[in-house]
Image (cartoon, rainbow, N blue to C red; front, side, top):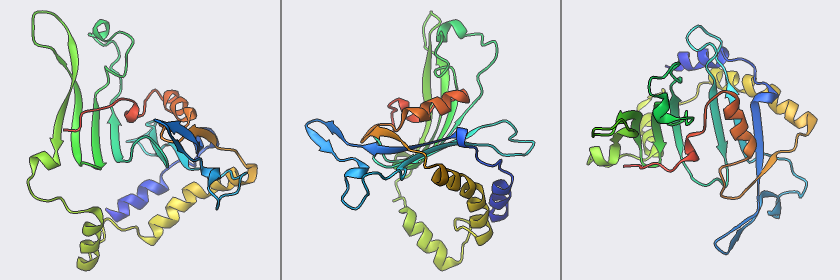
Length: 233
């Protein structure tokens, strides 16, 4: 497993500046409460261009994943806290039920979601026919919700890591060559950002991040999965 992780990193294309969006949160007032911006912190310089958000499109140079975009994003002061992996399947050319979906391609796209935290779950979003005489389609979730399925207490992430460390289980730990490969991928981009002193795009505290991230996703005909509120159980 650890060998394969290194192999993937070494097969990735160099990151291009046009495939990266950086942001920094600004102050925002909601419900009568004002949340301070990043540069309003006394320990942060007023002219700081340090990002608090990043989104990137990455590609793997091998036969299996050629041309498939891997979009990643992470940030502070966003509207929700969580970690998940989403696999959005390709749109079907010549969809027989195009009239039922109209122009909403997002509804027509099946999706596999692996929610790491909080509230661990794996679910598949599929389209199905609504029972009845008419032809109406709906989106449903085939859901494995761990807390509902298993009565046993699910260990905290750090509990699992500590146990792995005690038992000598190394699969979840980063090996030195994996760390080197990861830095080799990101260091040239970080250096370019620093040398050109590129200003991050501002986004309100508690929002979904900078608008540029949505343009990045649209560039590759995908969308971020947190644009809609989904049922977790």
